[in-house]
Image (cartoon, rainbow, N blue to C red; front, side):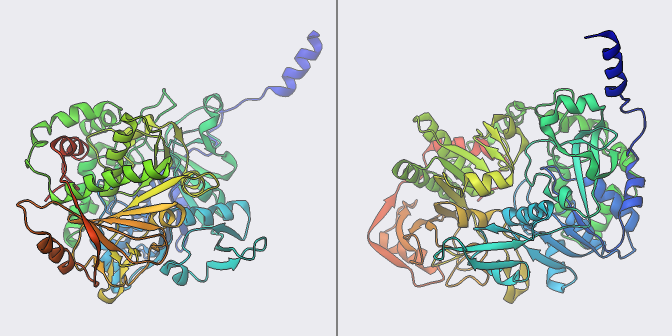
Length: 595
């Protein structure tokens, strides 16, 4: 190139980047400048929860009654419950209002607030909440969906949900969810440059639709501040553009106690879930004074995030960084190796899970399903067993998880379906919209769902949300309704008693139209697709042996409806020693396998 032209272009094309602080500020300042009382605050941009930002908001607004509205897919003892206990929020818009990791259960603080009417709970599903944010980000008034139709959520959310006839096919009915535009959004990323361009860690879960939909932009906390060239090098992971970012706040370990994977960015370190921290918070939630003590120790008595990390301690931090490594399960499992053979015989939960796995394998072979999407707990353990058995036999079936896992091979030692050690085994990493809206229920979706429930009725309708007459709150839909609405066929795993197997569920979280099978610790119930009734198809051979008449009587006595029985009932074999041992490798602490 001619010298003068080259110098001319250099003068035009070159400019300095990163020489000014841009939007970089400490987290305390970011919250003070951009969070105001009465705001609706959205989180869930990517999988990582911006815990450091949540804790800083709690510090600054504790005792001031700010009346926030919280918007996020999930929340429990270490996030939503903090705001509820402190009187910081008046409403929560969510899909799962309970504790999730390492096993799901109602959260006592949230249940009490629901019963007393102190906080409004607005229930959605993982897919529909994100579709509302997507519509808000796109500037659309609504977005179509297959989910929620036929559930109690359809009636409860009538101001934000409509069921309409398709303008293109008069015989088809479609749901529409109203756009949602929060006041402000929070996100935790791996890295950002001074202008706010942010790399988000995989899996992408809710993606960044909330950040793009928020009226006043997004406050970003990050593990590290980097320059523009670093962002360019990993531009395929840069999900949040700088123009929507209000503040970039350095916050190492800012997602703790939840994990944060650095897959694909070798210059940065990830960390795993701090199980002990989470279980401590969950235990504290059982008593108001104990929970207040826990909040004071970990939040209110810490001046800022840096002091929180100091209190956490280097040893604990390094432990979580070690936990994220894909082979760390080997040393972790070795600590439990002596427990894998005890008890000698399968527990009722193990019988139910192995039985579900066997039936799932038969369904997949018979109907040529290619994709499995399982819920948390017994359901995903059954799916994991089936996956490995089928793969060893040469069947090309893939596991999916709601937050964006596709084609993953679950690792032992941690039964939590979204545990981050499974992430590097994925063949494809996506988000909730892709997994739930396309892979599960889209145009080419040979999928089967396996889910749990709080209650099930004789038509296969499931309740995981509320027991209104008792003023009780369970946990919500999560992705359960999306699975029941989108998969071609659905199986349920649920321990049996009369409070769970009932004539009619008081709240339909997930309609039972696509349910064909329910497996309990004692037997297998089947029905055809549609509004047909569950019938007892088979029972597990009991030990010590008793007559078929006695087995059927026991199952009927623990069923809340007049149970019908197939004329030729099957006697199903109990789990083998090998099946039980392999299953226990996934849940050595026995969160789901205990007596």
